[in-house]
Length: 68
Image 1 (cartoon, rainbow, N blue to C red):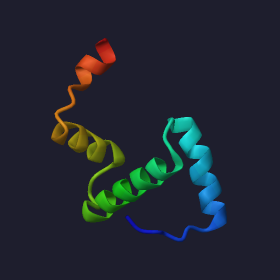
Image 2: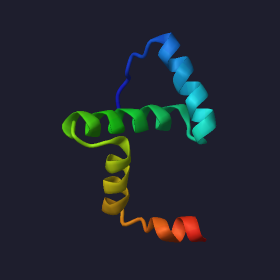
Image 3: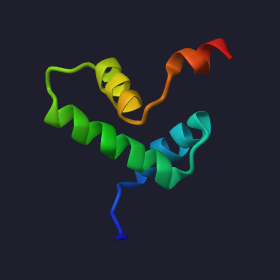
Image 4: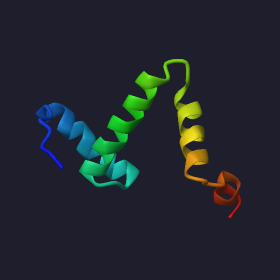
């Protein structure tokens, strides 16, 4: 684990987003970093496509989540 320097304004936005998404500040930053890396590696994919692929890789059955 390392230390990442984040601009104070960006940190404030991460803090606000983390409260909405019910994540820790670190988990929110990690999520945005991962999604950003996936988006850069897959420029032809939409956010929804990326999330669908990640859910499939994690073997999440979204039908069980939304119907339950």
